[in-house]
Image 1 (cartoon, helix red, strand yellow):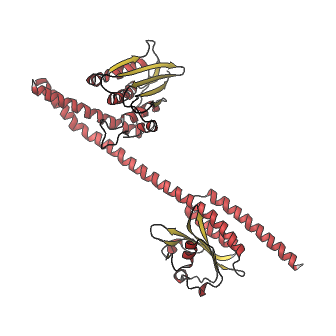
Image 2 (image 1 turned 135 degrees about the vertical axis):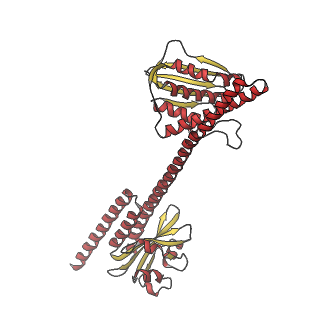
Image 3 (image 1 turned 30 degrees about the vertical axis):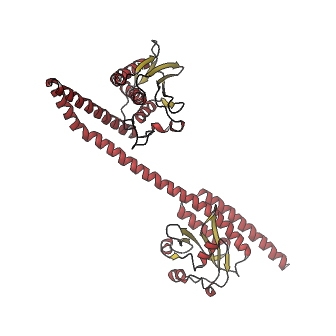
Length: 415
């Protein structure tokens, strides 16, 4: 009768252990806070094996050693200060060999690292340690110490090994999340610095540039002959600089979601005509032919006239920049039911398929900056995209590849 009762208790104990393992798995898969995970793992391991304590030692890749990441009943911060060597320690042996270890008389083993026990005033009598595997490597060691009733057994090894495998995956996921959050924080800080610089630069440069343009305009009225040509070059360069400052200012406002949009009902033909008029001179300098491909029947959209014209000016400038001389640029529009489709098509350098999305990113250019043969800051397409999308439209690029030209398409909701 006593034997039967003992077997029933043993079966009940195993069932409880399996239930706690399942519960632990659920907790580990739903918790991404690393400190909370570590405390949960050590507490559950100590409970499952009915022992006085449990600890997790993780491998420090920067300094080849193990360190205590968590331990039941101890201050993790204090334990973390104690380095555990890979060579000459019990945890180090488990880590190196990737094999579990049972020691039911720890103090007799020369590998026992007494510095930890002395530091936390804890005497270790029995110990079970198992490796924590993650993919093809070992990330650390999970230990259980001082079995309350008897000695550690192979069954305890199996239970702690399952716990360690679950724990390794959960810790790795939590670390990845921490790294991702840190990277995002750094990216946000870098982006904020960049935006502040753009805003400051575009603001501070406007005053001296305005003085240059003012004096150059005054001189142009008085200058004659060769001096007149010099002044004209100064005004052209200053106008280009002013255009760049306007682009930087618009990009800053877009990214801060502060761009002032004043929609009105206007035909897409008028928008495209305004944009074409603004780039007539640079197109003529490159002997480019501008062709309009839209009908006379107005296709009305509700957009900010000035900002939307700027978006198409940027698309046209992009086409001019990458088009060979004496080629054609087509600007057109067509009715598409609830939307109006407009496009700018060139026969220039073309875009690799894997760059069709990236060209709209801030300051991105297909050519490397140190070898590129085309000018510009690489923000014109970014601004065009922001202006179109903030008004409920879409913009994308199509190209069959390098040397085959490109078409930039825009859809805007009808008025």
